Image (cartoon, rainbow, N blue to C red; front, side):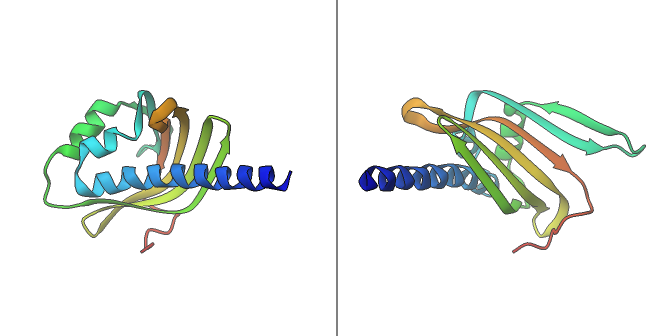
Length: 148
């Protein structure tokens, strides 16, 4: 019985680590401008949304799409896109996972915006974990953009 419990605990740790590595792969790919690396973490069926407050103070949600995001990532630029994350929480049950993390986004060394990234992932057979849903909030205030 104790071997089974130890095995299950190790598997849970391994799954958490796999999800964590996938999220880091996304942000590494963004920093590197590698759209293929970024594309590899997403499912073919992905939904993307951004929540923000417009200049009139209205809360809005804008639907995004993977293809334009990948094009933006792969377009050469002078400045690195650097998304720093902290306070990351990962929850897993069976073949689904949820990741919630605070972030600050920089263009080069200049702070751009911050917020929360919320990911839903599924385990896709031999390919492993893939992001099927990404929603983020965006703001200029109210978070800690000075994370190293």
